[in-house]
Image 1 (tube, one colour):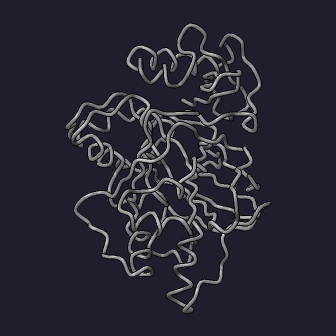
Image 2 (cartoon, rainbow, N blue to C red):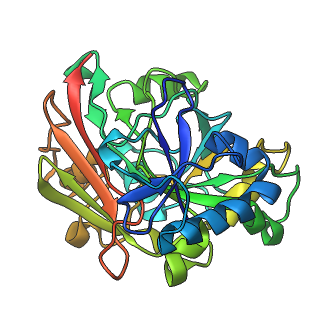
Length: 324
């Protein structure tokens, strides 16, 4: 099942069920007005949305309308909670080596709590105050859960993953080291993230939802040039493990989004990267200095994950960086 949110003049937008080819949609009137509402009542609402999705595919759903991903908001335009992991060891190990940090711990996931009151839509221009802050993209996969009880075991955590999403976690690299040294976490270095237009149920990925991981490549094009095609299966910790980690000492509210961290593979020199910082790190190791600059105003970034049949399952994030 494919879900999206279209503008209706409110901060949370209007929930719609989208066809598998992403060309048509229907409003789930009388079921749920927003994705947040649907997640809070998923036990009741989920099956009804699935029935509506089947009717949409057969052409019998009421009020079928065209769907334009360029006009869509983020599937969850604002969330109660955004928790971002760093589950790809190749990325963490490279960054640690380049910046002389302590080795990344392998016995527990890395995770921080970030800004969640706004997620950019997939085709919005993204404003920044200055290029000097080191504007960088970070391609990720993520999950959205219903209410998760405190202390949920990994074996049960998978049952709480209701939707999968694709995320661009914007980062300001010049500010990040300054804030890291304070020990208080990121504020200025982590502006709002962007989200691809479609949130999908795990079954929509078929065999590409494997071992609690997205078994797909994330294709990244910077200024229309291929930058990376790292594979999502290489997570050292699965999404159920990340959910259980986040819920160890607290329950998670329905609508919590949990990210994988930058998608990265050990053979990053061959397949490319999902962020500029990783590319710069490789250059520092191989050539003694970074030569790839961060983003400039007017630059574009496109990210999408395609299924084995060529469909962009989440749609695409396709954005331009502008002066704020």
